[in-house]
Image (tube, rainbow, N blue to C red; front, side, top):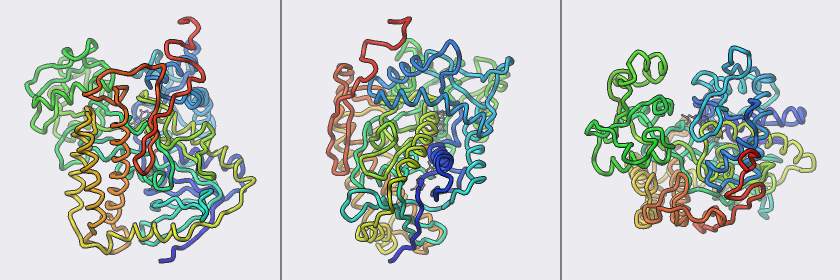
Length: 570
Ligand SMILES: Cc1cc2nc3c(=O)[nH]c(=O)nc-3n(C[C@H](O)[C@H](O)[C@H](O)COP(=O)(O)OP(=O)(O)OC[C@H]3O[C@@H](n4cnc5c(N)ncnc54)[C@H](O)[C@@H]3O)c2cc1C
């Protein structure tokens, strides 16, 4: 099958905060360039940046500082973050928030004196989270999308990237192969620079928060093209996902952290509080601690009818709960729960992947011509991401990538792709259209169970090796399983098959990295290695497609464990 072909100077995969910021910055740096944003869904309507509720961390207040934001990020990341990436995050977040307000037109909440309101978020020593009510992501995405639409930036919507294609001698990227989901045809886009910004997304777990279009395609493509991923064992779980049964996509979606912050109680199936037995801060402990305690109670069988736990707010007064958590009360009511006066079933839910493609502070990767930004990248957050540092990460590094790509292509020509690699990718994607049809839903359920039970909140060596065997078996079964409907246009079963293939490949990388880290740190907890190793010799996992994991030492380029950049604390 011969794909259609076109050229674009810069090709951006993904239209979240990272992808759209990259497009705007590349266009600003060189308006004459051909820039294309390719996205699996509709521009502005998909991905997780749109789902951001809480807000955006940035050191704006006179009493705050980039050093303080930096130390919170390093300590929150348990000394695993790349310090140059973290420094870039905290320093450039200030520029980006001003750009969002003053150039792109975002309205954030303000104090009576006109300054930007910044609220408290867990794990931070200062209230620095900028927000627009509890719908911050919609404000950011709407303004970004309008600005992209207003410029001469090409869009390939409902185009799914399926393979990064190198040159025949493998020395650089030549372009990307897509499926046009509206027709089922293949399209090869040759580009002088490509940005990977497809946003990761741990949707291989039974309960998860990210949007359904996110299935780790970018990370799977990066592995296949030979890149290393770092910190893949670090998957963040949010304690309070709504649990409303298997029939609704509302299950897994987040009930905001403010509920616990305001004094909400978590109860077992026996309707008694359990958190005080686990941590002195009880329900206000950090996300990893609360999720672990919840999972332990669930394993003990102290569960609700749907197999989770309860959150209870009624003791705070139903009127107050209705007033302060209007959106959450409505979300729960939609699923038949009374948050203000009754009990709501909740479960920890997979929220964010700290791991991703290894990259440098200018967003380059080791593959010339390929750049990465946002949740597809690894190293900014280390073992844990602070709430509010996710959207800062995608917008800061999206902008850096746009600037870098515009500079990079000044001296770059279009490169010829390896035709055999294109043929091989098409053959892989075509497989489910000719194989005997099978039960994809059953395969998905097995994937969910494996990741949730053995590679989730509590891990140990035996479970991880069972998981690896199961993931290998799933991969082989998937390769033999076809889809019933073989029409090409908008064939969701076909795309589901491709989604599952990405999720199994990346699930395997998570499992292998989790087996290699024989300690507990941040989001990664090993029942057989419950303690954290020496911080001075901190090392991060770096994994390749063949499963080889290398432990690489963290370079403490700005501050060492036990030290601080805060003058008053020194
Ligand atoms: C419910 C929820 C609440 C959150 N709240 C906060 C918060 O308050 N503060 C915070 O800092 N962070 C928050 N986050 C995290 C934050 O959303 C992410 O860190 C960030 O937005 C990721 O940006 P991104 O551009 O990397 O990816 P995304 O915004 O997810 O965009 C990824 C894009 O890639 C596209 N794509 C995927 N696969 C393909 C493919 N194969 N081909 C082409 N396109 C593809 C998608 O369609 C999408 O357009 C939250 C996340 C969730 C799920």
